[in-house]
Structures are given as structure tokens and as C-alpha cells.
Length: 75
Image 1 (cartoon, one colour):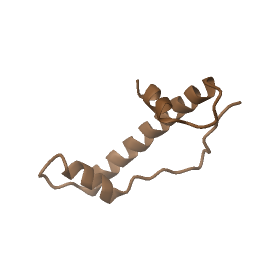
Image 2: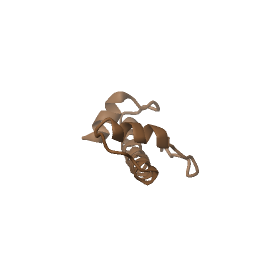
Image 3: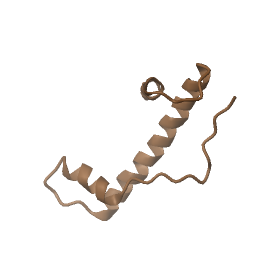
Image 4: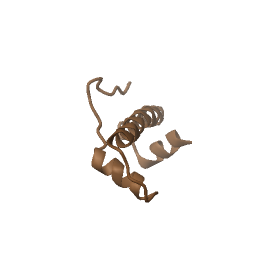
């Protein structure tokens, strides 16, 4: 039983939320491009973590990804 993520599924971290995340760490202004870069990176990392978590769930014979699978994927 293999888990596949749809190819066309698009995740999106909003630009305004990414600016908020960056601004929480600095008093500097944040460009749209900086927020877009952070968004793109987080989306890619999220996909990679998800794939690892799916593998962990599958190895345990489950169809539900649990927090423990995400934690395992992050290690």
C-alpha cells in the first residue's frame, strides 16, 4: 500500500503570513520577494517532511499520518 501525494496539489503559505513570521524576528522592513522566498522554501521542506511521514505511517501499517510520524520525519 503506497501513499502518493497528488502532483498538482499546491500548498501556499501566504505572503502576508511570511512577512509576519519574519517581522516577529526583526524590526527591519520585509520585501515581498523575501516573503516569497521563505514561502517557497517552507513549501518544499513541507513536502519533503510529508513524504517521510507518509513512509513512516506506511511502515507501521497505518493510513493516517500522526504527529509521531511527523516528529520521526523531522529527526
